[in-house]
Image (cartoon, rainbow, N blue to C red; front, side):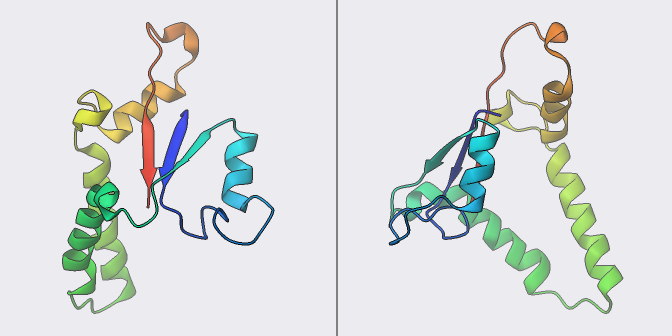
Length: 121
């Protein structure tokens, strides 16, 4: 992984605040030599994918009544499993699980360099 893009939330960056240090998130990225890109402030159109995700989550989890913690956790696990096995155009039509398996392979097995950007909001 080479790049992570986030919004400007305080959980990701202290940029724009009157603090002269890196957030814990930025320190970890720096230690792993991962570039941190931030979206432009007050630009919700850059968050379109995550906003759709929040809307889906709201329908799947927040508007449902679960009768137990186990029922909630089982529904969440089904959701995560499905999401990690759906093929995505941005991953060259691989699922996140398939892309993760490629990253875990040693470089001697790779025919070409693969680079992806992970968006976290």
